[in-house]
Image (cartoon, rainbow, N blue to C red; front, side, top):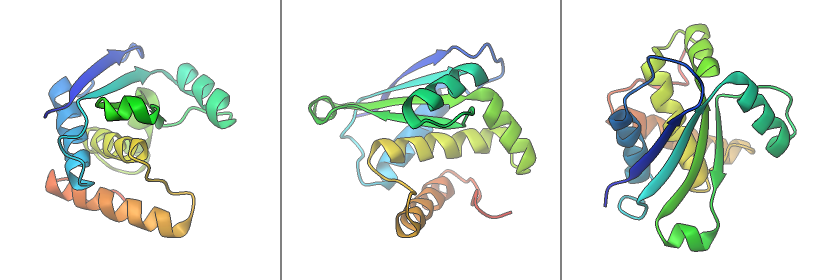
Length: 152
C-alpha cells in the first residue's frame, strides 16, 4: 500500500519539492521503521513562519517558528491507515539548510523523515532515544542517497 499525501502549501513559498518527493521520503521513513504498507494517508501542510510560531506556541509552549511539527492521530485512526499531520515551515527549512551548509532538498527530505518518525512514536527527548532516532534517520536517508545530516 502506498501513502497518499495530502499536501497543502499555505506558506506562499515557491520552489517547494514536488509531491512525489514528499511521498518518496515518507514511504522511505515508513519502510526504514518497519512500517511499510501499514499507513495509507499523511497530511502535510507547508506553513510560513507566523503559522509555525503560532502552532509551536499553542502545542509546545515555545515562542518561535520551528522546522517541523508532528501531530499523531488517535490509535483508532492509525488502525484505519491515517498516519497523522506534519506542519513544515518553508522559511525555517531554507534558513537552516543555508546555515548548516546542506542542500535545501536534502534538508526537506531529512525533516519529512524526522517528522514521520515522530508520528510513529520516535522522539529525541532523552539521549538514548535521540541516538536511536538519529541512527534510523541516517539509515533511511542513506537509502535515498542523502548524506548524514548530523555530520558537519
